Length: 222
Image (cartoon, rainbow, N blue to C red; front, side, top):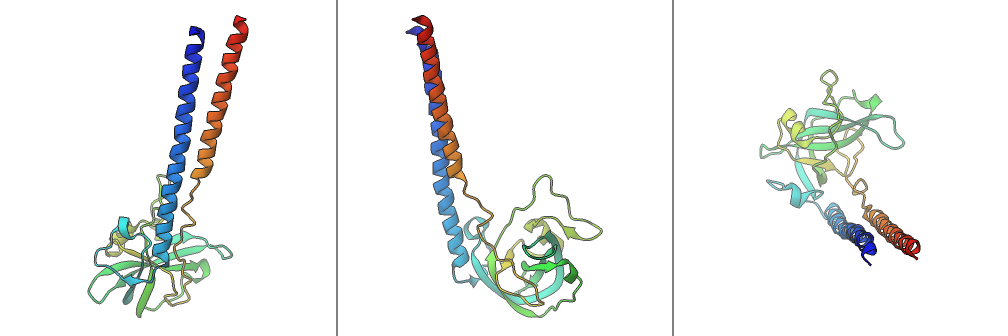
């Protein structure tokens, strides 16, 4: 009986660990589903007036509106749109009557239209609060010669345009023929079901290998 002890112990421990990882993925799947449901609800809500101090954790994707004036100070982020030529996302400083300055992502501009003059008139902006995390360790710094950015970084952009680190992604046109690019949850995948299946299959495989090993040990001793 002693010869079975270690293989059996190893088999039980391995299956237990793999099953626990699968269960953890199922729990994460449910947590992500609740998170996405909350995000989608905030996107679909009727817009509220822009809060004085938006909180990222509590208000990400919250539908808001703000009235003010585009200042003509803007940044361009390299982007592409399905069915369009390469272009940029236009992020512009927006001045509120109270003196606050925020960022507004007005939308997508094709390459050929980047030099088109734009107005700096009064406007009402409707959209969603967002703190995108597009950059990673391999993302280049903004090009000093062209001024082109390669990812959205709210804090860095706010510093550059001398605004507060608040970004509204416009969901409706803001003028000048700029196509809005509303936020959605499509870029936040919920793949945990697939990961859970993988862990459970590995657990089944481990259990099968354990049974086979015990059978081999028994065969050799008969």
